[in-house]
Length: 153
Image 1 (cartoon, rainbow, N blue to C red):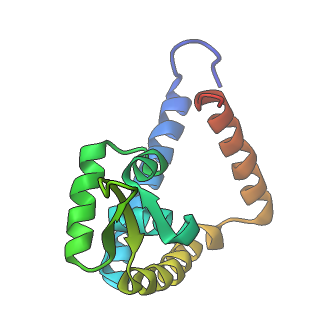
Image 2 (cartoon, helix red, strand yellow):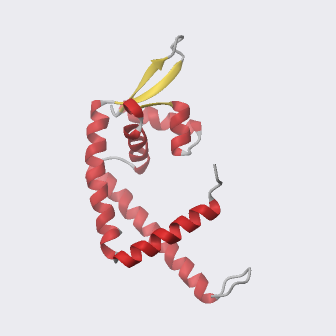
Image 3 (cartoon, one colour):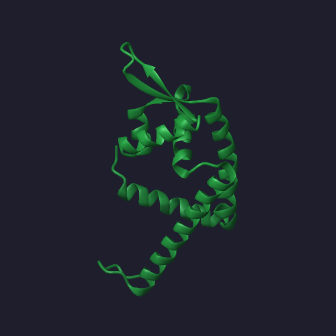
């Protein structure tokens, strides 16, 4: 493949094929979350972040950082999820002005069900079509891309 600043026809073709495959995969997995669990990808992301946190709670700033979303997006998402009974806002600190967000029992059950269903869909749509060699190559390539783009902490 060409090593110049522009892409050759085969490179464009590969890029377009890869982005098409990626978008199809994401769309199918998002549909699976809706169909199998009744939740959106955004809800799944919040549920997973909280389920991994100590005590299944985070303050809003921690959640913003974990999700890499704008604070307003997190706030709106939390309102919708609170209305569905998945999360609860908890007054925290001496003045009670700091807000933490915690999973409710409904949120915990939803997370457990979603992890099973989403995992099965990821296996079906992604891992089942990979050989061990392809998976190893994809892992190495993904690590290389992340290391080349993501700022080092």
